[in-house]
Image: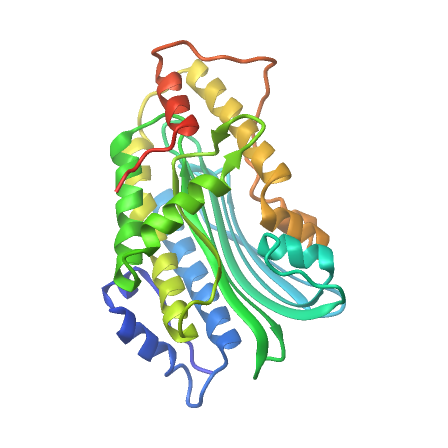
Length: 333
């Protein structure tokens, strides 16, 4: 089968043009499953190449298949680079069976079942933690799910999003990240960005702290409100937006000076990142409950973190400026 490459240049295509291109993969009609997997793998290739070019270090590839052959991971890892502590990208393809527990975890409770149900998922994820605490962490995940047979699934949907997690607030960086994602959303539906931006703020909420994990971006799930070809095109363009939305921020901040205290603050924020991922992140819960490889599921955790009892920030400090935004999300685009 031929493959179609979805790179940053894909952003120049209109929704209808890309939907048409998706229908032309190969010489015969291709299932939504195959198209989704192609998008995820090609996006992973483009993203990893861009990050490697910036950092100067190489990615290591680790491919794993479960003993029953129903789950495969392609993990791409850049560790201890010149710019990045870690860049972790994963493509997962799973033919599994939902239990009531995993169905709730995968859909946020929207899919309630009493008996086992077959499912398929193709997903792409990216998690980035940089060396310089002035560079924000970033996360993106896009996925296609269906349940039932491939030719006539009983239910299908898309999910995903991208978000920015700074240690120090640079308002122009948050505005740039949000603006790029708004531009993608607006090509498909002017209601998408406001809806998905608010959804992101609500989802990445560390409830027991009363703060968000970062300054947000977009988040959506259970999306099946129009033709799957258009939603495939939407997901492809969202994935392609990762590079122009994030890497200019990295280039701008990666050579800034920082102090030991600022590095300590970054490690405290990394502790919050871990709290969210282990307590609230649905992908983590689903991955572990569905029998995924723990190393692949937990690779998103930052390499260095700390916790301090009853830590507070000084009023009027740069740290306090960030905390104000995390506690009271703002409009950026």
